[in-house]
Length: 228
Ligand SMILES: [Zn+2]
Image (cartoon, rainbow, N blue to C red):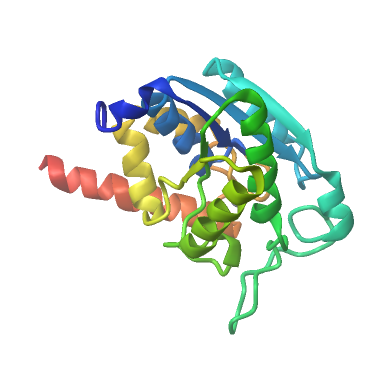
């Protein structure tokens, strides 16, 4: 990976950062790609306060400036399974959106990230959205991100570039990317993806843990095969 994007080494980037596997992998990618990196975490009354703490700790350990923005109004507008304990986490069936979908979340988060980017003089915005393990979130689609990039630039008369390093990777390929960035153990031990708020390998039972752990097993298995 090193040197591949050396032309960007002079520039500054903001990573949309939750402290989970995906955004932490994006942070490592950004640290290798850009001269200066800051992260932004949105506090919208996530089910688990651990998520914010986890993001704070990682930013501190990796020595990047951490912006924490209060987005509680999102919960006021759109209560859902990620923000309310009394709403069950369900995977979408028969074309329905999963109960974890927060309408407008990426639209709002990326718009605020762009406002922040303009304030701190960053040209690049990185988000860990991914279309491959498509769980039905329409605002994780590549076409949406490209469209939003154009709209944000028109709205502010800027030339921001939104990067989505994970867009076409499945979970095992995201682990592979973390490994290539020498960050596999770090991402595995320090990040929080679990809906039950368990850091690292998680509870093992919730949909987020199943996806994450299945991807890790698949990647580690492929490595065993490669080494034989
Ligand atoms: Zn879990």
